[in-house]
Every structure is written in C-alpha cells, then in structure tokens.
Length: 259
Image 1 (cartoon, rainbow, N blue to C red):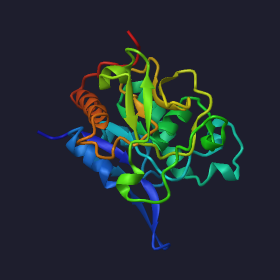
Image 2: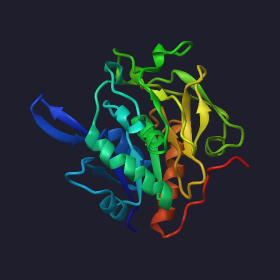
Image 3: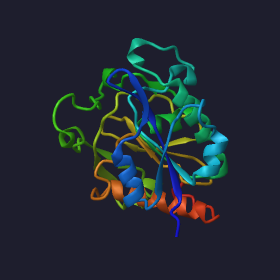
C-alpha cells in the first residue's frame, strides 16, 4: 500500500560558497518516514520551480521546516532591520500562500520553528526580531558551541492550555523541549491561538482556530530524536494520522478547540 506523501519544505543552501542546492535535514525525513509513516518528498521552495497548486495536488500534507533565514518583515508590515537577519523571499512566496490554502481546505501541515513563524505570519501575526532583547525573556537561540546532542538538548518547559489540542495529543500540560530560535510571535493574528508558552512568556505552540484540518505548529524542533522523544513522537504520529485521513479522502478530525 502506497504511503501518503508529505512535502518537506526545503531551504536554499550554498555548498563551498559556490554551488546552490535545495536542502533538507535528514532528521525531518526520518521523522516523516519512521514516525508519521509517510513518504518524505523534499520541495524546492522557490516559485521558479513549483507552484502552490502543484504542491497541493502532489502532496497529502506538509512539514514546514526550520531554516536560518527569517520571514521577511514586510510580510507582516514591518521594516527590515539588521536584527531581522537574513531572508528567503522565494520560500516566503511558496509557504505563506501554501499555509493559507491548507487552512482553507483542511490539508494537514505541521509547522516547525521558522515553519511555525510562517504559519503565524500567514495568518496575520507579527514577529519580534530578537526575543532575547525583550525584558524578562531568556535566550532561546541555539548554543553556538557543543555537539549536536548539546545543541538540541532539552532546555525549558512549555505549558499548554488545559484540555487544548496539545494537551490532548501529548497527554500532559507541561513538557520539556529544546530551543533553537531567535525570533518569536509579537502579536498573534486573529485566528492564531497560542496554546503553549515557555516560562518567560514566549509563545511556543499554536494552531489555527476553526481550520478544518491539522494546523498544530511548534517553535521548538520536534524532528530531533523524534522516534524516541516522548513529546516529538506523538506530535508526528498525530500529524501522520491526519495526513493518512486526508489521503484516504476523509477530513481529519479537527483538534482545534478546547472542550
């Protein structure tokens, strides 16, 4: 039986400062293939090569991955500054309309780190360019040194809304997560529901209110050690179930409102 197809949003990357590629972390493919039980398909996120209509036709669901470049602040009405870092307008041109179309139709997506911010911006949110500069906030960025295990180590808890979708999927109101991001939600869009917070008040988990499909998105990186991590695994399993339901011609049961 064919596995449903999950499009994994790729990032532009330069090999040896000369050769352009579209790349995706193998841990994203591993989580999609071995936990969500879907077929991972890397997408060159550039409107010169693909269209949103084509992606919606080919893929049953999408993982909006993390990435070093940030969503361009013009997408949420702000002027760019050095604090906003690097940008990828080609990826913006694919992912933002893709999110809106999926929200409309119910096609499942799972937003991760930059992907979480794409979901937020696509649905009318604004972003802080550097949350560690805000009073009372911790440094959520990836440690500059250390092994991969040290960079992705669990560093803070996230607390979810009682009986919200994350609480129901994970079976716990508080979990430990890694943290490797610099930006964060400033003002949530009208339909963006913040369902989980870090101890310093940083929004860490969102979904889109009244969307007919799976829209859960997280600011941390659940693709790391997804097979074994007790937080990551149920998130990818729930996403995989929603993708299979879509592929079978059924709408996934929305997990979008507190009971």
